[in-house]
Image (cartoon, rainbow, N blue to C red; front, side, top):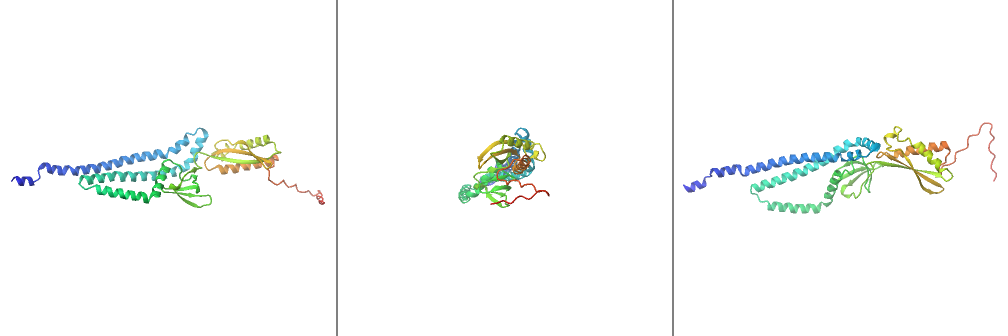
Length: 317
């Protein structure tokens, strides 16, 4: 009789079998789901904060420059926001899901009594082999993550990577796609980028060098240039691109029988080329109107002869 009682399960053992291990497994899985939800909420907040960081930096610039930069950046803000949010959010959510549910699975395996030692040893050996075999791939991904988090560049920016210079068309965790001025598409691995020159962050500078002969009155020429370019920052449509009134820096160099006067203008990103052309055009028209000859240009042809004007006498050698 005593042997039969020992074989039959008692009420406490049955209750422990129902509530003990199964309840711990359920609690572990529910806790993993809740933890993943909380981490995803934190990731969304972090991504939103990182996305607007560049716009906040532009808004802190005082005066008209900050307002103009914010207006220019508004066109690309939506595209960059969507791309950075999608890339960072998907990456961080995938990592958090893998880590949380991986720990949950290992915990459940331990609760049901499965040995974890051989599994962890195999995973360690596989991780070491993967690390040695895919070093460049891991380097590309890590560089891409830091590049996106730090907002070094985005779609629409003109960048110089050393090996290629052009407009960014697409940014992923492994590769950046760039189209240069000739229309050639470059695929640059993020891990191979040692330096980045971003020509679209903040503002750009339009520099124009004007050669003037030594025989010209430099003070007169400088005053004329200031007069014709002073209103460029307030005249439409250039008031949207020129952030501050252009200024004559001074004489940049002297060589070859002429002096080079430099004009500088602070412009919106990627708008310096158009501003340079407009400044040159205005200066050329003003020089022609005031009789200032630019060195290297041919002399003006003589006026046409009238009906009563005798032809010039032939030269005698």
